[in-house]
Image (cartoon, rainbow, N blue to C red; front, side):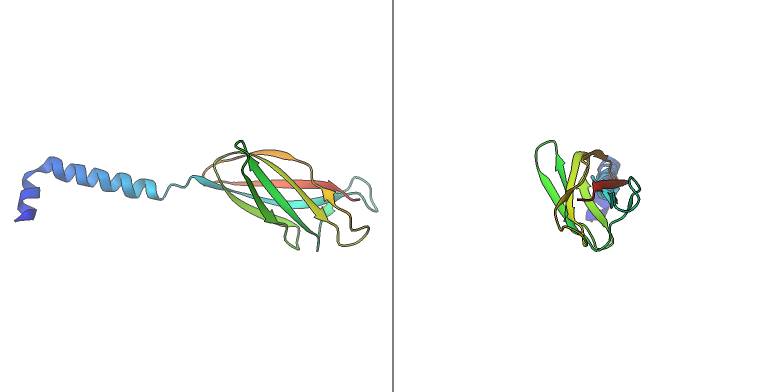
Amino acid sequence: MGVMIMLRKPKTWATVVFALLVLFGTASCSRYGTITGTVREIGGVVPQEPWWVESATGNITARNSRGREFTVPITAEGSFTLELATGRYRLTGYFIPPIGSGSLAHLNPQEITVIANEVANVQMLAIAP
């Protein structure tokens, strides 16, 4: 009997179908994007020629316009991945080279815009201490 009442009111069906389409149609839309990157070092044997940082330790930090920070470690292969809400971020970071003085090397800061459902690739550079 409840079904018959709903069938007699097509506007109710249309409203329910519309609500379900809005609910499930927007549920798959993300407000997040991804930043992937690599850390490269400048200096060493061939000046000004970057090479991949391997076995270094360090972090990458993304800071949004409200001052909130998100930090991830740099992998042993010299890469990193951040999944962030859409918006503008300032990327900074540091690493400790595996060989040499062991002192901290700061990475060049970069501004980046995160777009929903997209991947942005960046390369962070550092001058070897």
